[in-house]
Length: 255
Picture 1 (cartoon, helix red, strand yellow):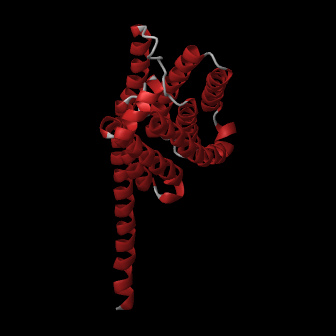
Picture 2 (cartoon, one colour):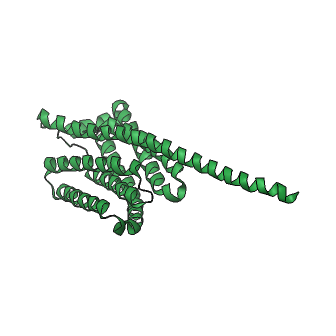
């Protein structure tokens, strides 16, 4: 009787494991697709920032510099964040299309923003940031085509970069937040970019959880950090409109 009962139990356990695996795979694909949609939406946000710069450049108003109050620090770190996930996506097994292609496009768009900052400010720092972006983008794309020779080390390299970038992105957005608070103005900072990237961060958190913490924790840590900074920046857009302190600081800057 014991033998008769034990056989179905083994079969049931296997069926249960298969069912759980299917559920995990389904959630991975669902959240991966949702995340990709929101990344595409966030790309519109990045492009909106680029378009804001172009509009300010075309206006020709001396008091409105095209890249006024845009933090070079923040955009450089944002670029590195997108690029590190591009590398991470093709370094893990299986190759993660949900991560790779949207992050590659985002890296290119942010590189264009770095180019515009350099063209506007003509500083050594902005030139160095844009040069760094061009060099690392070419190296990362080369790594995509090298294949197996980089796969083994790529995951560890990109994971290390992501941890460092998470720290840097917190510092970079702190710098952007500080610029807004000290000036009482959002300058050329684009609200849509923060809103759309925040939506991407929320979907990225869900996607990272569907991947499992052992694989998705770098995505999770960076998305949470990025999401918190976006909430603060979105609040500051409201703050500059209603705060007497912000008004006073704007008057001081104008004077």
